[in-house]
Length: 277
Ligand SMILES: [Cu+2]
Image (cartoon, rainbow, N blue to C red):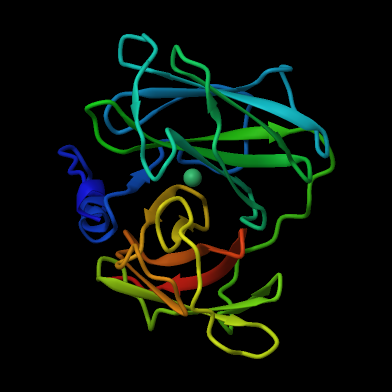
């Protein structure tokens, strides 16, 4: 994980804590308020780069294929043309709905001139938050998020509640998460155990997913705090995968673990409560 560990100088103190423990990836997005999403707009990252998100058709509707265009510019508004490959991709795009029920991890195609594009379909109308996670050439990791609105019927708002049991069955695979009783600002170990859902036997032939044994994305319930964590042992093949991070503040968070087995990506989401410092 050494090569991914990048330092950033101008981090707010709490985030710095998270950055020290997480595998070099952390970001707090600027928009403070909830679900009044809009179509397109600029959001500034911690290093002053900006990302704008827009739909090629000018808008997006539920259950229709939409092309999302991401433009990255510097402080002067010039396109950021070069990127470093980071976990096999130039840009990772995480998409969640306002309830954090829907999660998607996409890899937009780079078209040059600071412009990335990807086709995707949103399952329902309403607010979605998208996060562009990238490394500009010679720079450090950036995560820039923005709320977008998708036309169509919106699912009812529900409060995110911590799961009683941190076990999920996904496509015949059981994923269990153990993390003890996490507290804000403390090192927290996340241990995933991956088993065959029928036999409950440990799966020990996980395949690398984007060059690592697994990927973990963590969002606060309001989608304002984003953590992307890589495993302690990037070469692991299961049945356990261990990650280490630190939550910036107390509250409810959703944690998605992503693993690859037999060519399929398994995504398991867990809702946890993190205690205050
Ligand atoms: Cu990715």
